[in-house]
Amino acid sequence: MRNLIMVSLLMFALGCSLCTHKKVEEKAAKTTVLEEHFVNPRVVELKITYYLNGIKRSDSDTVTLYEFSEKPVSWTAEKKVDRPVLLLYVARQREYPNQRDVEYISITPAPDEIVSKDIDGNVLEFWDLSDEIEEGKDITITRRFKFKAYETAFKIDPDAVGEYDTEDAVYRYYTRTQEFMELTPELINLAREIVGDEENPYLKAKAIFGWCVDNISYKYPPNRGIIYCLPRRTGDCGSYSLIFVSLCRAVGIPARVANGHWVCKAKKNYHVWPEFYLPNHGWLPSDVTDGRATRGKPGSLAGGGDPWYFFGNMDSGRFISTKGTSIQLYPSPPWHIWGLADTNKNPIFMQMAATVYSGITIEEQKATVEIIQGEDVLW
Image (cartoon, rainbow, N blue to C red; front, side, top):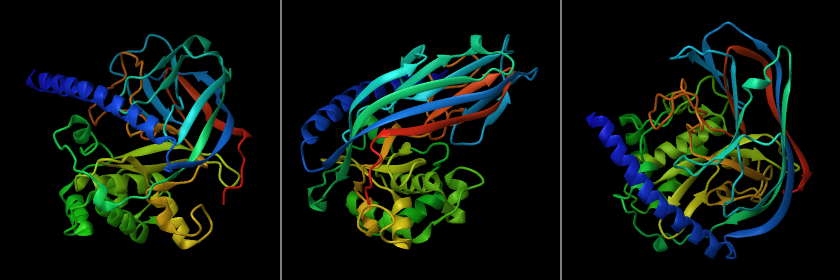
């Protein structure tokens, strides 16, 4: 009971602080969108189609979470499922300073609900497709929308960086330990070793970015999480992001993951990259994966061959679906675990969509992205 009360108080504090934080971020976005931080806008129009193919009934009482870019996770339902259940959650692209004027042209069929409840401000489109389950039937959802994508170009004066309010609930939320980004003693010691005696948060984050570029090699991981990828010194974009965010949090820099997809002439695949927060500046993008790739093959990406371009800067060749990790699913069925606990079964990155289902099997689940407008040569 005491733990429940503490969690309730924390959630209340987070809610109050986050309301203020949201208003501050919205105000900051409105005052900075015309500044030099967001430049070279281009119009992008996309058609994204989600396919659930080869649906068959099953007698199994297991529940499966399938994140479209990750391996499925299954577990035994806490409560017996009375009938087959199929729920679809799609990450809805929302407004950010570098992603603006989002306009939804069509969503077919229309979602049952559009929900925004999590602390990271993500928006989910939700379909309960349980009544659509038929042996061998395929289900297709199509979304078409457009937006303006901006290149992000921050020029930071380290002396102009303010101080964090370490008692703020938002600060504590983005510097906390959590599943896949556990702040172990080993990780904390490594982070302190990387930053040394540096106290400026911008320069500490820069040291961490440089260390990741120099010491992590690209290799798709067999399992997720900082406790696996950091000792290996290898990983994909998700691993790079988890490492950077964890090291930043370990030295008191608020950091989080941005989840999305490439959308330009050169690249058209899932992608994840980190962000870190600076007082007086807000959230700055960083892409350690691209910094490493650029160092290995200059000119292969944006930035003119400079890997440091991806520290505080970002090309306009991508869209954002969600922010954060362990994305909360709303609305959730009674037998699905949700909340802030690290033991929850939620999408790690939610770059595109996820299903939660029971009493059925699905032969294929995939999403395709068609660029109607915006297939530009950016580098």
